[in-house]
Figure 1 (cartoon, one colour):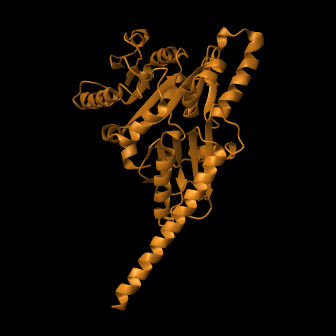
Figure 2: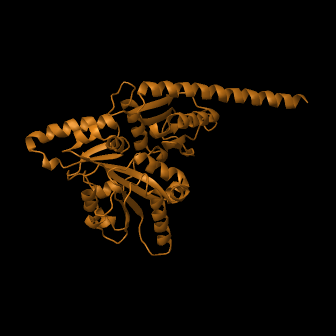
Figure 3: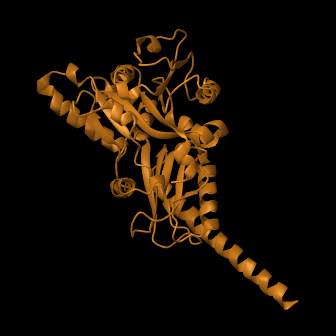
Length: 361
């Protein structure tokens, strides 16, 4: 992992559709003394802020972003708020070592994740450690069928917690949970899924646990990437236009070809590219895998691991998209991949020819 990632303040994003139990989960976590050094940012959608009044915290570091959705109208407020938090801590006016952001139930996650990659203030001071999504067991089937934003939230989650199972009669509960888990798994093949009321689920631990991020170079992250690839073949049936595609390459990819591929994907997919992450074997740096992470219009600048996690040096990139059939995405990626490689090879040949011409004079 890069040095910068080690010193930036970790951020946990807690989201879920309207009424799915985010505030209840937040209260449960904040009652734990281990969360005392946590700054909480609550985003509310509406003219009157309510949720923060329902949130019990062990300190006073609770800030509310009102009357707008985090992904749009109050985005500037989020940047300013986190900037103020950082400087307050530097001045000794606030004490925290992590931030938890509770979004409104209508928030789109992709633009929020993109902000932490692209906005200099956020990218320099904070990094998203994990995304937790709550899903209401009682209303989930209707919500997932009627509200695409809820499917997007699930698709981008690292951890999915099913709430309100206690409101379902015992004879139906297990069957309902099994059906819901199967549907959630169609939306997200790799997230950890559990019941929020399970005694084994510790919300505080989840909020402090790093997601399975390829930039860590850990074996756990490699296992996540392998699972994402094995579970997301083109024929896999995803929910409500959410799809995933895995790019796997045995041979190293020239740096120019990789950059051209990423630029083309940004241009052609744009908002349809919800999230992308993976490891790349770059021809010019065979011993140091490049890490790709991004959301929507932004694919973050490449970062590098000091070494490969193990002997597997294949390029493995997982794309999560909306509104694009896996087959179409596969064709587009393969086409762009071939064009990028040919262009990179042409540049290399042109460079060799110029070098020969200079030597001839």
